[in-house]
Amino acid sequence: MGMKDAAVPASPDAYADAVATAVQAAAAYYADGSTPLGDDEYDALVRAIEAYEGAHPEQVLPDSPT
Image (cartoon, rainbow, N blue to C red; front, side):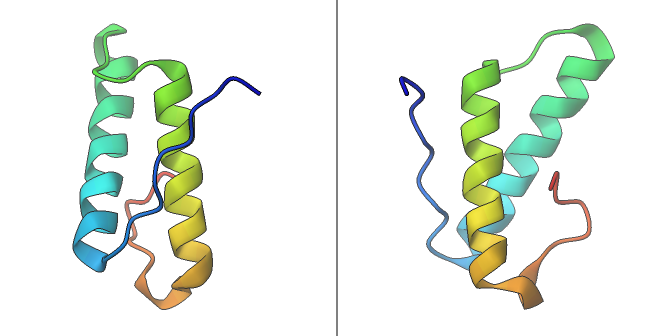
């Protein structure tokens, strides 16, 4: 496939950090077109967040990008 997947967060704190990173990257992208993450990196991060949420649905944060 060629795309590198982000590691699934291993703890609630790592999950919260991943969500915050994705939210900040999306905000920067939509504000002025700049972002600290490339498209593939952002997509991989969101897939990792989705995987964590699938395993821990009770911990889904309201600001999750999923």
